[in-house]
Amino acid sequence: MPLDISRIQAICFDVDGTLSDTDDAWIQRVSNILCTILPWISKEKIFRFSRMMIMAAESPANYIYRLYDWTHLDNLLAKLYDSIAHKRSLRRKKNFWIIPGAQDLLLSLHEKFPLAVVSARDEISTNSFLEQFQLQDYFQIIVTAQTCKHTKPYPDPVIHAAQYMKVAPENCLMVGDTTVDILSGKRAGMQTIAVLCGFGREKELQKAGADLILKTTADLPRIFQIEKDR
Image (cartoon, rainbow, N blue to C red):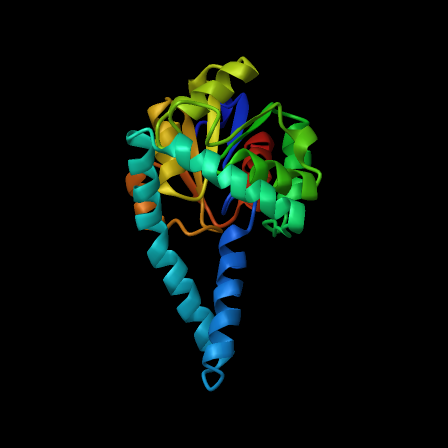
């Protein structure tokens, strides 16, 4: 079903791969390690191999996280991760990457729509990313893995965000880079946009039911401008 711009009254954003350039950061880390271990192989080949490794790990990781969520072990895992993240944050501040153009798009959309973060990340690292790039004021609500009983791909977190923004789920848009984001939005009755700047693959995102697929999150304002100019 094509995207119906006229229905959209609020927008929910995933973080990793959608606003935060987490995937490229991981690729760079893996590449740096492999370049040290395998100095005779070109950096270009190592970078391509590192990307393939991270992409291959993405779907199994999402499945394992869903299994933890289904068995209610995710709360225990989140608390453990929070404890580790807090101790790490006391030692050194993590440096996040941001998707190019993300700050400008949030500035432009913030003037037209209520916005929400709906992430499967923990609360500490989600807020750390937002604080690093001074993005907190753009969002009415920040939903993390610990906010609701179930996280994505369940609809609970996006419905929670919609209720807080006082907008019916069917009038909200979910933007994310993986099938987990798209499934969560569709199960809540939302329209969805998938972006390819993370590690979601176009065919699997189409199969999950994305209403529109963009190359990058930064293309989002153009969609609304195109509709306006018609």
